[in-house]
Length: 182
Length: 396
Image 1 (spheres, chains in turn green, purple):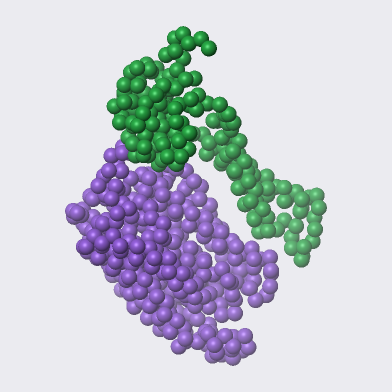
Image 2 (tube, rainbow over the protein chains, first blue to last red; image 1 turned 120 degrees about the vertical axis):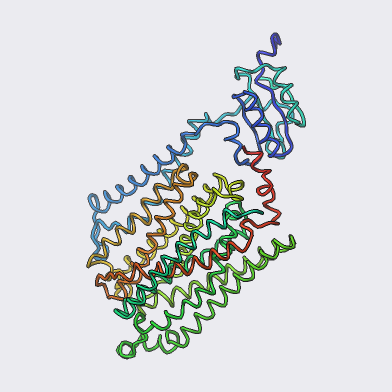
């Protein structure tokens, strides 16, 4: 492997923290320092982290709503088509279009549609599945799914400069700061 | 902790509620002499609304002790004050007993004599002495729980004993069971027995969901307004509104779920003893009320509350909560009046007046209780970060 001009080829600089509160404070300070391309890695959901990092509103809920409406309307229409048009059956003298009995299935189809659309939306927006990611090169990164909290400033950031970023991250009081190979 | 602003606000609410309540009470007494049966009907509607609020406060308080959460911490003192209005509600139950012969069919000997099922029911369960005795037991359970839990919480303010949190949690688990049992039977006695033959096993949950819905709506509206005042302004944040909005949303969906469950089971069965309840609501203008209820008590607030924006903005949340509270009355009207009038449409001006009169009394005691204690519990270890502003410092 040719290692010329290593610095421009870095994925980013990562800092490791011991508690979610430290991560929150670090993310806020990093944002205040003018960095915008960053990502945090945590074993548990940290409330407010996304907002602190200046995350934008995701369009994922619209996938969910769309899927829910599609599922609900589709489910109802399917039942209508089956029990009124295609195969009308007289059940205890009830009308063919017995809307109350359609509601449970409509409800279930709404949930199914919403869940499927959410998963499809996730894959589409966040480019799942992703078997390789540069952040895996960060030393000790396995603990991000156990008991450590990571914050990475990415090289794509306009303000990024490896030494400056490293120096800045040292000031956040982390356990360690390291460069991440792409 | 300084809370002059909160106390002044409580005085304002109390002043307005008591003035409106006093005027309404005078009109109500006139109504009582003009039309006593309409009075007792309106009284039952009013009573079930306000006791739902008190019981909802007690229930949410127990849920909060069991699961924690900042949303519960910021409204805890108001929940405790609401639960402490229960003895007042017990006293206000006396007119229901006095009006029993006007509203409960099973107190009428002629009606009972003509129906052998009713004869058996009245012999063992639905008779006046046992009805009064059962109601007394419910109140003992509810008031006992309210006093234990609020008492410990107030004592912790003084001595800071952290073990009290443990007692509150353990008793809330046990209390939840007692509360659900007592409330289920209360629902059977106070509302379901309006039609003494009809039965629905989901009636208890319908009544209990109403407690949660009423109390979540009232607490959201109050905290949304009060979050502007010290010391709440330093503690209550968007995320608390968001959580309360979500809980309101969940209660709303649960209401629709239990109400519809009862309907679909009875509709599918289509049996003479049970379908009569829905037949009473299928003519004479009641279908219109049903549609209004479905729209404004479920569909419209459901879609508004779906959005994150409407849950996080205090003003919007307050407006929705107020709307839900208003339509709680329509739900009670729809539950009670068609059954008493055998499906005929009936509306009386007293239905609007009596709830206001009783609200004056409720708010008088509620505000007095809120004012007498610190608006935020002082020594709960789980929420120290919230109180000291540490959490705010991290997030903002």
